[in-house]
Every structure is written in structure tokens, then in C-alpha cells.
Image (cartoon, rainbow, N blue to C red; front, top):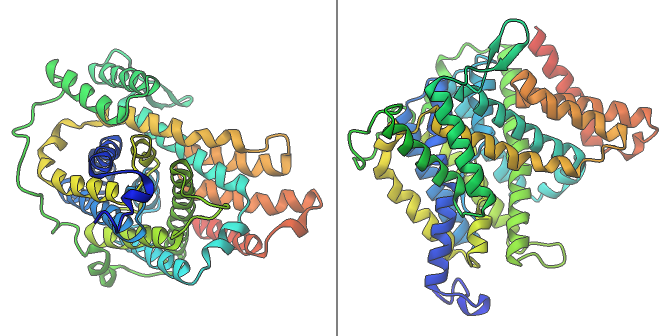
Length: 437
């Protein structure tokens, strides 16, 4: 074991890697409760989602640790789960079973483009400005959902949205949770988001705002309500040209966001740990294969796209240098399967602050956009703002990809545009045509 993970080379050991693996788990354990909270709004069984979340995170993280040997953990991605529920299912009207099928297909495509080395070509084709804008836009979108779910922001007939009723006990609890989480994060507590949720839930139960759970430990919730639904529902769907076009765009969006989210997270964590040499990451294909495989497996189990987590940096900061840390994190996700009763205390007021903070972290990429160049700034701005304003990640990406070639051509930089971007320009024009049909 020590030889396989090269403990001596990296100057580490079982204790250091185990503590680092635990740190990573605590930093991202919030997803066990936030993911079921979001996906259940699509009509899926919350208990089954909890089990699917834990299993997909465990499988993906174990593959990453054992195959790629990197201290990087995976789980259903924030943003993609919101896109799954609020855009694909609730807005576009696509059944959640077909949405799962779309996730599965995107994972399979990811596997192929990884195996055949297409990844670099696609990454180079899409300008960095649009990648940064997509990440920031998803952050604003997630934060808006957090504000909305907690009651801090409410619907308004005159202005569409307005400040909610701040005298409601549930809203006050959410504000308390947000303050506590901010304090923990600013003070540098590892797992600040998770601990913020725990403190908020405890205070909510103490004041009678949240009901006490019947127990803490129980048997593992059944996967039956979601397992294999990605395929069993295909025969019941009434296919049409519009439905086919919508599903194609959904698959493309899942693939796009997962593709760049994983690449950015992977290189960011690896660089912090000192794995990147000469701007190259050894075994990068194995790491991407872990992500894509976990996505397909997770879709079969019953959850949205599984991706690498930036919270892995907390484990690296705690000393993680090998895949053994990921093995520990994966094992802890398996252990968490027995704590599903805690789902009852993780209400919107508990998860809302976590969504807002995650949104803040994702929006940090705004600083990398070249705002002084209008041909770059306009497509990026439309991407960022359209996501929360239209309640759709796909719409934001589509607007950015449509206006980027236009502004670049008008600026006389048409030759700088990769041919793939011209193809995507027409793809997203067709996408809007289908939406208006």
C-alpha cells in the first residue's frame, strides 16, 4: 500500500493522509443533504437521492484515489444539480427520468473524449473568458436559489423580486446560519460550510423552528425509486423534434459544465499540491476518467452529474499528497449512508446559507474576465447575468456562445475564433428556435 501510493516520495504516511481525507470529507459533507434537498424538488425520492449521492461520491472518489492516485474527492456538483431541477425539469418540462438519462449520456461522451484525447482540442476552442463567465454565472444562480429558498428574497408583483419578510422565524434562522457560516469561513475553519449547517440546524431545533429527528442512525434508504429510471422511462416518453432538440441541448450543457468544472478543479487542486510539472499533470486522463465514470454510475443510481470538488484543497492544505487520502474520504461517504434520518433537520433554512456561500466562491472567477475589452466583456456579461435572471444555466451559456462570434467579427477578430465556436453558434441559435416553437 505504501509503495503503491509512494508515501516515501511524497514524505507522508497513513496518519497524515487519513487526517487529510477526513478534512476533505468534512469540507464537502454538506452535499449529502443539499443535493437531496435540490433534486427532490424535481419530484424524486429524497431518501433514494441521499443514497445515490453518497454512493456516487464514494465510487468516484475511490476511483480517483486508486486509479489516478490523487487526493481529489468527487460528488454530485453544485450548479449542475440546480440546472437539473430548476431548468431541465421545472422549466423545460423534461421528466426527471429523462434528465437522468441526459446525465448518463453526457458521462459516456466524457469517457470517449477522454479516451480519444479530444479534451484538449475542445478546451482550447472555447475562450477562457466564457469559461470564467460560466463559472461565475452558475455561482450567482446558486446564490439566488439560496436567497429564494430561505425567504430572504421573495416574489413581487411590481419588481418581480424583493426583500422577503425578515420577521419570519425561518428567515431569521437562515440569516443566522449565513452569518455563522461567513464567520467560520473567514476565520479559516476547514469544513466551515458543513459546521455552519450543523450549528444552524441545532439552533433551529433548540428554538422549535426545526423538528427533532426520530433517530440519528438507521438502515440505508432504498435506491428503488430512482435506480435505473434513466432507462426504464425511455419507452414511455412521447418523442418529438422539439423534445429531441431540448434533450440534445441539455446533454451538451451537462457535458460543457462538467467538462470545464472538472478540468479547472483538477488542475487547481493538483497545482496546490505540487503535482503539475511544466504545465502538465501526470495521469490527467485517469483523473478525468474517474469523473466521467462516476457521472454515468451516479445517473444510473439516481443523481445529477458527479464532478471533482474544489473543497479537496482543504485536504491538500491538511497534508494530503496521495490517493490514499481519497480512499479515506470515499470510505467516509460509505459510512455516511447510515445517517439518512438527519435529512429531516436539514431544511431550506439550513441549506440556503450553504448555497449562498458556494455561490460566492464560484463568482470569484469574475476577476479574471477582461472587462476593458467589450468584445469579451459583453458575451461574458450576458452569460453571467442571464443565468440567475432567466433561471437557466443553459440560457446563459447559449447567449454567451451566440454573442461571442458576433462581437469578435465586428471587432475584426473573426480569424481568432475557433471553428468549433462557429458550430456552437448555430447550435444555440437552433436551441432558441426550439424554445420558441
